[in-house]
Length: 116
Image 1 (cartoon, rainbow, N blue to C red):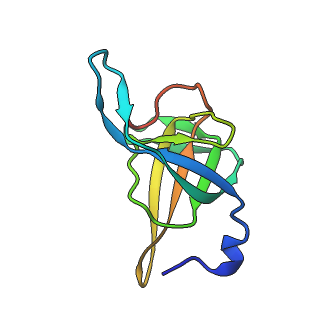
Image 2: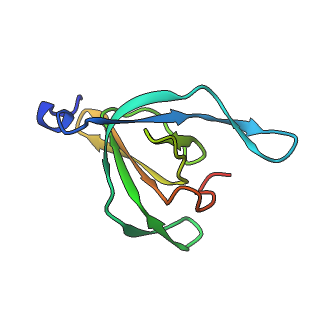
């Protein structure tokens, strides 16, 4: 099911998500071709407990206007070119199935997220 028109009208921003591909010979992650998504970015800071039980500071909550398959290992690039660590990926469901995706990111340059 598509997101309601009134919510889509609030989504005036975009992010690019590049899928995690592998690790190169130097132990660095490599990524596939990025895909741009329309979204709404909320800059409200909050705490999130990661899968290891550590508290992480979420700087941006990004609500995508669709429900693509995104992994915590993928790379998110904001419109300003920054690549903040991806801390959490949540797919939101309704009665028709996957509705939209919410990404939680840390501060750019603050280290890796849940991925590699």
